[in-house]
Length: 87
Image 1 (cartoon, rainbow, N blue to C red):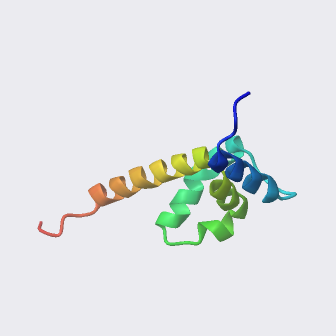
Image 2: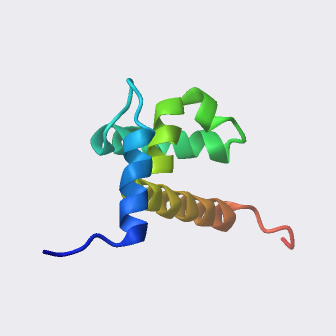
Image 3: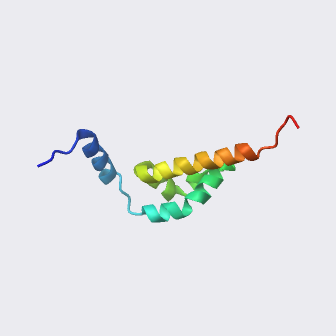
């Protein structure tokens, strides 16, 4: 029988102990992730506007990775679209 690694067990226990009565799944998180990131890029408090998404991102590494990738891509687009001050 395979043994569970200590880090894996700690992550599973933390997730189990931190569950709430009201949560969202990955699909719901992914559907709203673009709005969440856009609020952040606009300097607004996305976590306050979408607390369940923030909470899900804290627990789900897969969605957190998607969030980071989307945020990086949109930051790059904004940086590339910024007017050139030398012109």
